[in-house]
Image 1 (cartoon, rainbow over the protein chains, first blue to last red):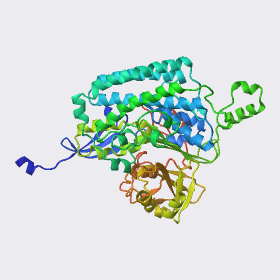
Image 2: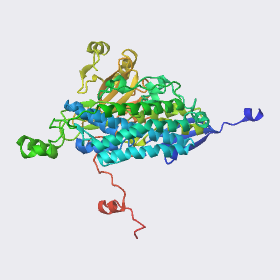
Image 3: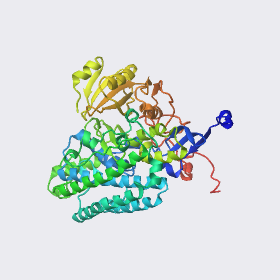
Image 4: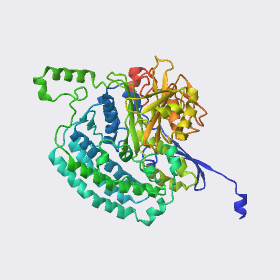
Length: 395
Length: 165
């Protein structure tokens, strides 16, 4: 009692990161601690700033596509997709049905990819290291599929303005189907290790609570917002690529704590497998590239017979894609939330401005709301539950 | 995805309206009115969710910066873009949308637009002692020497290298 009344409030200032393994990259958090309690917490970003938005302005639109993979490197095809949708909006160009369904399939496969890393690293951060190995095992298979399809394991750039870079091979589709058949079993496996694990629950339940009002005012989106009980999923509310025709649920959980965020993502993993299966099943025949010659080059065989095709080919490869002047922002639901590219074109081959509305940027900003007043050990769980990718925060 | 234009017109009678190529309606207001406009959009029109803020720089146009605020209505499921043009400073909207905090810092850091009333207007991406604002169109690409020994020799940026003797 004496100690309590005469205690001098002595706080300790420490830096967590930018090289801390639990900060998922290079997030630095400036902490003020009173014993074990976080009094104030200030996330500091910029350690991975590479000026991607500036670099866009020096490149053609097609070259710029390769930069989008490197922003959210766990969701490369989602980024390709958002970038292409904005460009196609400026062109008002028609995309063949096979490419649209193929894009849904690829976007959902990358969502699986991203959520697998979340489940793995969240477990790892909280001491359940075996889950990480199991999740990465499945992710390896997925990356093998990506490599087979596009030649790249991570930076795929496979979704292009006007469609897809190349068609799916029948064997690839079979392999993809086999992978998706296996996934529900694997998800059960991860869940058996985490969901009812008393230690995991102890570290997650009631930790890092974020209210729905705060989340909305701070621009928090994706699984973090849905964990606050807000049914905001752009695939449902503002459908693109015909998501309204697929049978799936927008997962919502209550509580707004770390455990709710985990539950949303795991349940979403199952829904995502469902969507991908449906996309595989309904994949129609036909081309995967648009016939709009201002966006995609003509097929090789036309070059020998059509003068017009030669001209289109020449214009496209010397000047690049030239969207009509205007501005466009067409967001998608990425694994982390609302992701969109705001593109301003002046009609030339290089963009005036490309800005990425990165979901993690807003999500990390809300970190103090969740961490302050909690224990410093809980901060690890909170950061893990944000599932940050610093590549898209810093750009 | 279009908001009923008459509703926008009624709420912001003195502003310029339009619809961008992506179908999102926009309202162009004077810089000093941006905070009130954001508040009206939130309280009267229901655009409660903060989405985005960025700037476009056109050095030849007066004023050179166009700021783009993006809001979302959870009830009507649509976006609204607020635009304003300035050369140097605008009032901060952090009082209306706390989420604008980092976005305004980013625009301040990379474009040099000041936000009056911002609680902590410091650089966010670049180092604190950085000179200039990289996303301005007149900021050169490659103006900063990459500090490798090879580039030091080529660019003559000095600095002896002890290791190479």
